[in-house]
Image (cartoon, rainbow, N blue to C red; front, side, top):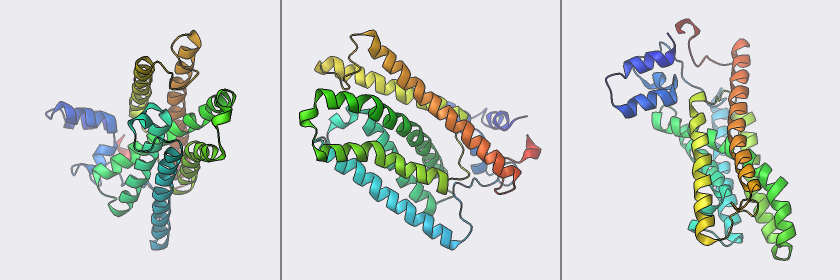
Length: 274
């Protein structure tokens, strides 16, 4: 019997919300369930921390990332004139920036409260969202949107705007790359969270459509909903989100399996129970 089946059986008599939570988090829930504690799932290790010095280094890194991510978001949006405005949410860049800021904040809290179920789950989920959104946002911006903006609005693009765009479409992903490869050696992406990423993409598509229809002005010039190419771009972007998540899911699983084979980390699931 697999871990998920065991958890589902355990929650048969509970509310629908608890059943959905069990399905969404799979084997991670069993770590926090006292009935499974120490039997099926070892403590999930999000960070490589062998001693107190490494814990302090990680904490310092977390605090630096919180400061820099908030600075990138606030300063970048201030230069574009949309700081603390609901118009920020018209742009997918803001969604990725907010997810990144929330991830680093939750990761810092996780350093202090590593056994908290809520904080651990929030850290994992925001990490998955940020690491999925930022590569797509950064690539689409520099490959598609920035060249178009330079052609259409070149006289309005100042050095300050260029700096702001670089922060918003380069600063976040730079922090995440260092964090992912240096400080998250044991992190894994959950297959059951694919729907969450797809939901975010579809929700933003709906927001983008509503804003464009209500204002009469496209949020992005390449998506005006008046030609087939607009829908092609939407399909490409949403497919890229799922593709990025699945690629990270495969990579993190392979990386962890390789580490387990080398006996460098404790197993997330006891092999004798599945």
